[in-house]
Amino acid sequence: MRTEPTFSRAAIVAWARDEGVHSLSTADLETALRPVMDRLRLPKGLLASMTGIHRRQLYGSDWAPSRGAVRAAERLLSKGLDGSHIDCLYSTSVGRDFLEPSTASIVHSALNLSREVKSLDLGSACLGFIDGLELAGLRLEAGLSEYCLVTAGENSRPLLENTISSLLAPEVTVKDFFGNFASLTLGSGGAAMVVGPSERHPAAPRLVSCVSLSDPNSNHLCRGDFRGMVTDSAGLLEAGVELAAQTFRRGVDLFGWTPDSFDVIVCHQVSEVNTKRFCQAIGLDEGKLLKTYPDYGNMGPVAVPFTFDLAWEKGLIRSGRRLGLMGIGSGLCCSMMEVVVP
Image (cartoon, rainbow, N blue to C red; front, top):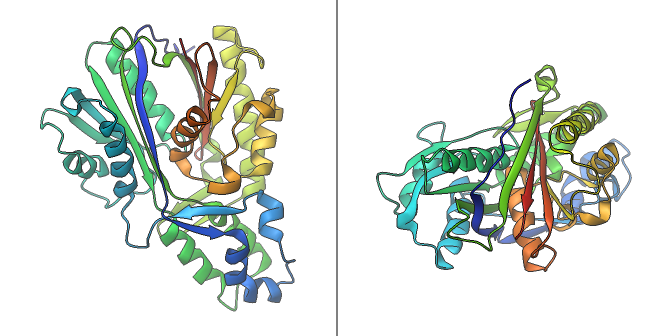
């Protein structure tokens, strides 16, 4: 069995989020789709009733994904962390400014970080940020980094607008509509975290352990690019919750986790149905989870750090609490990380 990582001195020493500057309600989204929904005889209120999403925040159409990441990182650095100490940068966004260069290089330049900083893109769909935290923690444990910055920025507006446009075509069928349904859940935002040494930041949330599993034979269930995204929502849900249950059992076997181990659950959120099924599959108390999907939609890899920051702001994360950072990325991949606040 592959060895799973544990951490002795890696901590999340700083974090910040950035919210999209425009709000789009699900009701307004349905208004834009009304011609096709009427033609296909789909009921009014379908999107909200099926997803539990009432609105989402969006950036402008011309905003590059890096911009949300940079805004979050700038907010993080303004809180007092010295950027000169950062020696590694991971950009974990699904969206990218260009196929090349790396989005990390653009974030790196915008933040005016040292040329000695090792920067690169990490991609694992909606799971990318947790993977970034894991690798940042391992670099710290190995003595390769002092402070590692992990960022993500997503601008879903171009994909959303392309999806609306394609769904309004006269040949679109009910099957086509629901094949593009997941694209209508997307929101925008940015997030940044810095992983650093716990001995210098004794009050910082500490990384403890992490488990991961994959189901690569399900890679066909969700495929997309900037033009659009086609998803087998039902198939993805079933395969995803099964993988989540298996991944959690790995944590049970290796680290003695139980559904009651965690005081707060911080997870990637797609919709109401997905979130409920995720919690049911593991046996988690849904009340321990701060729900961000109703007001922000599915923010991809931004969701976990964004929700972490919001939960901290609301006082849900505080001293003595044990956190579970959890996510599933299409492909499929699942990771779960234990974090403890001293």
